[in-house]
Image (cartoon, rainbow, N blue to C red; front, top):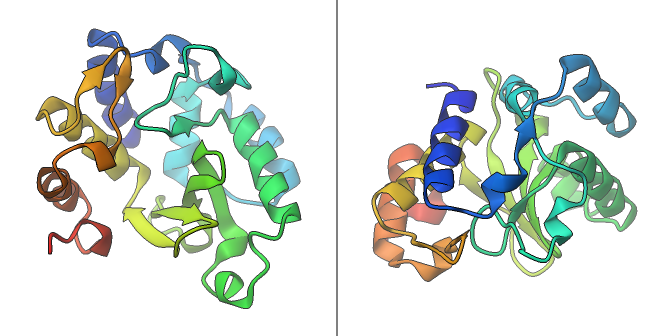
Amino acid sequence: MSVVESATRLFDLLAAKDDTFTRYLRPGLAEDRIREIMAPTGVELPREAVDFYGRFSLPRGYQYSEDQPTLYGIYWLLSLEDAVEQYGAQKRDGLYQSPEKVAAGGTGWFPLLQEDANFYMLNTAHADGGSCAILTVSEYADVRTAFVSMEAMFDTLYHWVREGALPVEAGHVAGDYEGDPVRVAEIAARFNPGVGLWVVR
C-alpha cells in the first residue's frame, strides 16, 4: 500500500465518522508548486511526502478555525505552506542549533503535525528508499521516533480508529494518550517495528 492509499483509507474512514478535519481537505499540489513552496527551506522532501502533498492539500491557516480541526488528539496536520513557515520559525528560534540535535540530523527535520511547541517532524536528513521516519520533537522532552514513515503513520492512525483504540467523538479523534495505552502501543508496534516509543513495558 502506498502513502496515498494509506492516507485515503484513513481520511475516508474519518469522513464516514463526520470528523471535522476531513472537511478541510483539498486536492493536491502540482509537483512544480511543491518544489516552489519548499525552495526557501533547502529541504528535500522524501518521495512519499511529495506523493502525499500531490494528492492532498489543506488551506493555509485552516488550523485556527473555530471548530479546531485536528488530525488526532491535539495535533493538526499542517498545510505545506504552514509547515514551511513553521520550519523557518523554529530554525530562527534555535530549535536546530544544539550540537546534539545537529549531530542527530536536526537541520533536516521538517514539520508535519503541530500543537503549539510540540511537533511531529519528518526526519528528512535520514531519508531511505523514498521515505523517512517521523519524530516527536518538543521543547519539553527528548526527541524520539514515533513512526517509521508517513505511510506507517497513516496506517497506525487508521487501525487505532478502526479497531476502537481511539474513539471519534464530537468530530475529533482522541489522542493516543487518551486510549488504552497497551492497546494503542500494540497496534502502533505492528506498523512501526523496532520503535521504542511503542514498546509495552
